[in-house]
Length: 217
Image (cartoon, rainbow, N blue to C red; front, side, top):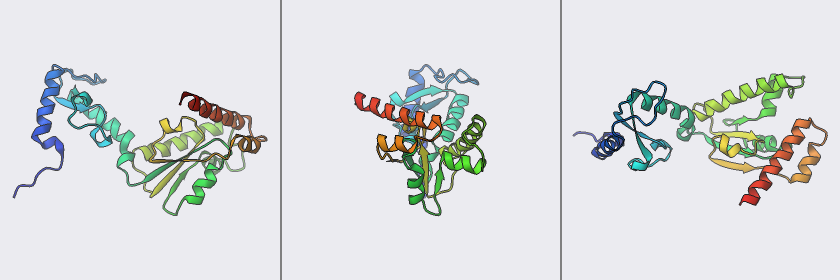
C-alpha cells in the first residue's frame, strides 16, 4: 500500500497553484537576491507556511528562482525556528527596577532559562562597573548570542524567560506570552533614584512609550 506524503508540496493542489504563480509573474524571480538567477522555477511563500502563512493564497505567493528561494528559506529558519521549538517563551517586560528578574527567577524551574541583562553583566564583570561602555558592549554581545539561539529554536529548555526594559520589546523578541511587571511609575522612579543616570533615563523612556501607546489607542 502506497503511503500518502505528509507534505502539502507533494500534492496536486500545490503544483497547480505553483504553476499559476509562475505564469502570473511571467517566470521572473520577485525576490532578486544577491545570487538571483532571474528565471523563476519556484513559488515562494511571503509569510512562511510554517509560520502561519496561507498555503494556497496567491496573495501570499511570489515567483522565485531556486537560489533566492533556498536563501530565503534558510534566513526564515534562523529567524522563525522558535515557533517550532518545544520551549515556551515568556517575555518579561517592564521598566528598570520593576522586579522583572525577581519575577523570572521566582517562576523559573530547574529546566528553564532566564535571559537577563544584569545577571549576564554581573557574571561577565564580577566586582567591576558592568555598566561602563565597554562592559555594556560585551554584555550585549553575549545576550544577543543567546537570543539568536532562541530565535533559531536551538535552546533546550522547557520555559525561557526573556527580561527586557525595551519599550519596543514585543516587536523585537520572540515570545509566546507576555508577563508585564510594573509596580507603578512613582515606585519605580523611587527605586532607580540613586542608580546610574542611564537607568533612570531608561525608566523615563519606558513610561513615555506606554503613555504614547495609550494615547494612540
